[in-house]
Image (cartoon, rainbow, N blue to C red; front, side, top):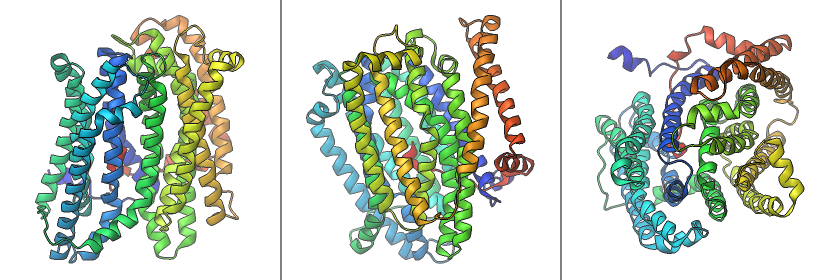
Length: 559
């Protein structure tokens, strides 16, 4: 047991090692998330009921992101360090944590109770296109899920202690159990309680998430108590530091709420299609983009605060190139193998072939912004590392507004310009399916996200990288290899489709897997011939014992 525990306390050697290890744990959680979505698609399928379930998520998610991130780990840990006595939690640190706990608990309970009361009025804005019966269903589900931000928010607070004492193994377990609880809701609660069973699974997952962090915190020497003599000066400092980041996260969530509200006027099942494809494209984002962004953040902060600007730039460059190196091939593979990916992961039970084609088309559009999303996560953290939280906030606000604008704009021209509709349906091969207007929502999301990336990139170049072409070489090398990956995979699909067939699970799985592997091998050969530095770094990292790296846990807002 000691060896197992020490496994998670090793120092990382470089950003690739930390990111590969973090990505491994993210992969486990993402696999469980895919299994969760497969069960939901199998049991319910895109339908008004599933639309109501996904819509009901939005307000509890907004509460969690808006309030929990005010007391997030990245904000609290520096304050706690200042008040600690060496490696021990001093009385000052305990007082600070008790004050935070008291204020946070009071605020999140108050907001949740207020939203519980106001849900009949809020549902008109988040689901304006639903029938009265479906709006009632959204109200019921949202009210159950309001317990989730309370538990997850408290877990987020206790997670600060877990991270402080480097109990990364315990911290990394929480998202896994969260997904396992949702799976339990689908398997056992849904047959008994219907769609409400899924909401009970969400609450159970949030509760277990909280319990794991609370127990770990208790063993570390911190048992929270309500404070009646609160130092509001410290509370104000925490809020002022975290407010820009919180507002940035909230902007994106509000944009998603507005997208969902547009989708309530579309064909039944559109919200389900949008969310299932969004979850699928989040897999490479979590494994690649967020892994490198989170792994790079501590060193970016250390280099900048110690005045090592060249090291800061170099670390940022290495992480940026790595994200591009991985993301572009994934983008091409997702576009070419979209139907195989969706059919293998979601295609069973109530999830029809028409559903598969729509989700696959939506996934292809989302994939256009995978690289942009990963670099946004990294670039924003680069600004957090230097203490500039306003710049990412302003850019994120502009991006969120553009997402909402493009949603309205693309839906309008899709309905009023037959040529545009024909072009989209033809290129994605969905002309004979109803409900294709939902594809305008991921298109708007991708456009807004790419705008976010471009603005952050320009800003970063001006502020830190004026004289450096820090990603262009890797971009063109990876783009060239990705083109060959996509082309070879597409040709291979056409060769293997008659051999394996397209009507069985194993037939679809094998043709997609073999085609993808052949495409990747060709892409690696192209990168080798181009002298890719990232490929050499990857080979070197795989030869080292990267599993000995310390786990850098992702922020829980990412759940």
